[in-house]
Image (cartoon, rainbow, N blue to C red; front, side, top):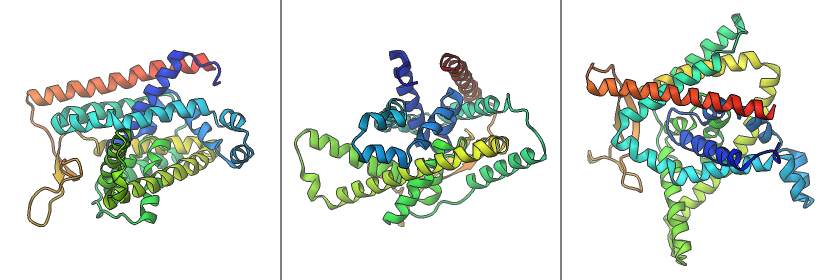
Length: 339
């Protein structure tokens, strides 16, 4: 499969990684949905579950080429390369857009979620009492999660590792937003803003030949937190992929119905018309992260009034749906090509 990929396929794969990385950064949006709709979800899960004891034996024995081929390394490396680029580029652009054009950004995401629901459910025919029950449970869990109150920030390394395992589930389970779970766990700013900014600043300083960060205890703490979070994410990614592969193999209809429910439930999280509730300090001022941005604590949703802004938002919702439909068409072409 790896050797048949053309240059354009590799570029598109990196772009898919960019899409997954950006989606994982935004609360309420799941990178797994991008993988599902773009037509590479099953290959993604299959490749991750190849990271097993056999793969580690190949690695330990120095058979690096065999290891790379066994885990579908070209596919995974290009995809993760796109995700890494996203965290230092696309996600920062998204942060800017959400800050200045919040309603329209959420409208696009809302449309993409609606499009995803259509995409996943249109070919699903195995409806019975079990799958309807799974759908209902998925919706209930999705809605319940969206209305939970966030916890306080916790930089205990064991808890950070746990956050990594849980948050990465959004990549393997469509509709389950890992970044929103981090908000609920209280560590979204710590793990996806402050620590990432610390790594970015460190790279810039190293590039300039400045290693003064080694004497900066706060910077070292942030880098340590990010390293543990990354280890937890890798562990969660591999673990969830094995579990999900087993579940899909033995309970595919129930799993897909649950995924549809999760995504329907997540509509409440990405509802465009909401007021952002920012974290406040004890003196009544806004709490700021390391980049100077206000820290989001939760959202208060409301029904919009019919005005120009609302019509524009609806237009962006339609745009979001069209983006998913375009991804679906591309995904179908890709699946036919490699069938």
